[in-house]
Length: 264
Ligand SMILES: [Zn+2]
Image 1: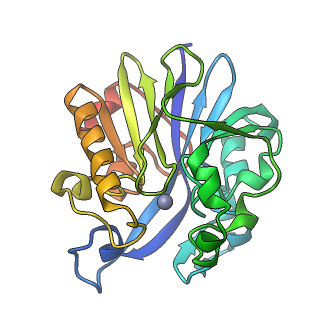
Image 2: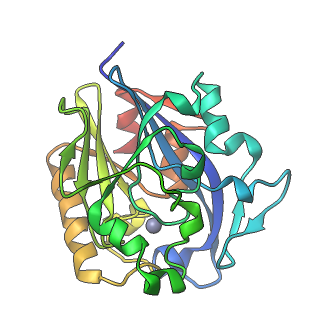
């Protein structure tokens, strides 16, 4: 097998006003976006990047609402533990969970991944436990604060020290947000996560309406993404439906080096 195999899936879907993600869009335009989760099968241990929506949102049909009234959809099949079964994995097969940040749609499955080590940037841990942020519902502690085995890092971190999975700080969206560079063949797919929700937002350099406490820092992180793109990384955006369906039908789909060309 190659050094590492990347799979992309969606652990739920969110209906959201486009303006929330691109601030100059019309206020009545509603879009549906995926909640991407990434699995890397690696010889030294399988890795998940984020864990999607919580099982408490599973519906047999239709949609439900999250803590602040966003409409969301999660079928049983789409819950992270059930998605893993589709590629023959059990929760005990996941060595590390990289939480890019601890927003509700990125850590919902954490509570069921009790045997994994969760890796986050240390400023993210401080923010997620900040009573002011919790009161504002930026963070929902019942979704992540399970006294699990959190490992805190500061700055860039090469997980297996072989260049296959590199965590890079892209602060701004949250105080400790990180993006991930994953080697696919000879190239890197840079998972922007929520530094750029959509390709259009990145290309037009338009910020969202939500989660923008620190605009200057987000812009610096966008500069970093651009610099990496110019150096050859292929970018995969945090919640971009059009890009998502090029590489995944929702279930875990393996991403080949050839498929990266679809994302340029
Ligand atoms: Zn977020």
